Amino acid sequence: MTLSKKAQQIQPSITLAITAKAKEMRSNGIDVVGFGAGEPDFNTPKNIQDAAIEAIKKGYTKYTPASGIVELKKAIVNKFYKDNNLKYNTNQIIVSTGAKQCLANTFSAVLNPGDEVIIPIPYWVSYPELVKLADGIPVFVKTDEKNGFKYTIESLNKALTEKTKMILVNSPNNPTGTVYTKEELREIAEFAEKHDLFILSDEIYEKLIYGESKHISIASLSDDAYSRTIVINGVSKTYAMTGWRIGYAAASEKIIKLMSNIQSHTTSNPNSIAQYASLEALNSDPSDIDNMIKEFKRRRDFMIGRVNSIDNISCRKPEGAFYVMMNISGLFGKKSDEIEIKDSLSFSQMLLEKQKVAVVPGAGFGVDNYVRLSYATSMENIQEGLNRIDQFVKSLN
Ligand code: PMP
Ligand code: GLU
Image 1 (cartoon, rainbow, N blue to C red):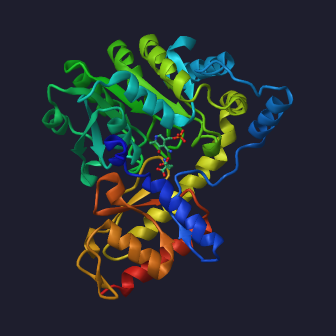
Image 2: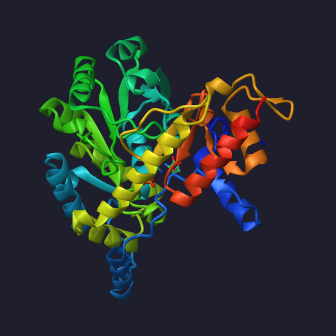
């Protein structure tokens, strides 16, 4: 019997696969250093854990409204106002099982078969697959490391067709760590207005910015931008809550209604206990996460210094998130045990085999000259892993 053609075109998430592989190797006693993880290595703060325990004890263990509890929606409304200068009411908010489900709901609510979504390369692995699942077509726009991996209006104009429906913005970016400036976002918003496009703004790494750059929500730049933007955010990265699975989205009431209808059939409400924990997270003192951010910055600075000290590989300084894109194109043509390093996959495979270091091949993000390293792992692991990468590079001939 034949199976779904659409499902058969969907690639598994390589980021999740590599994280799982490193964990499995470790549990088999192999001394592997994993740079795959896209999740904070810190534990969820205690006040958030306690709120979840309290929720269980109070019996908040039943179905909630499919789009989330109203207390949490109010806290989200408050967060958008305080942090992003965005005014929503609660019927413009949906709470979902991770930002991932918000993204899936958005594409299902907005796209018709054949509609095109502009996505920057490198992209986070799930965007193209989620667009395809909703019968849309991902249209990729290459960005350049020299330009900070950012869209240029020229490149956006080239990607534009009659079918373009939406443009995706992810700042701070996974995998590049790039943070767009207000002026750059304004240009993108004007482009969207000129061509009447929806903007999907994935802001899940909003709080993970190191140094001078500031997070700006593109939706806050004008009334027009506000009305055409779907903002995606969540608690996974900011509060070290990846396993709790709570994300949220804000948009026009019309779009949120469609997303809520879809969600009411696919999963019903997101986990009730995790919703109460997220309420505590959003209401907690913003300075609670300062130490985590300080530690990420320390690791980032060490990692970029160390990568750039190794001959033939390099990286730019990312402003946010917790990833570094390591340019490996200087190694192409070299050999490890007679096997040629010719792309991100051969590099990653040989590195894992020879030095037991797991990285995510850039191919998963649409770029073969790079591999992604996550610094959401301890300083000791980062030092050890980069020493091993150094040895691996030196061993090539
Ligand atoms: N967007 C980006 C850019 C991400 O890196 C992630 C990480 N998983 C997500 C969305 C989804 O996050 P979650 O489903 O854990 O809320
Ligand atoms: N977003 C994280 C990453 O890119 C977590 C894994 C995933 O959801 O793909 O590694």
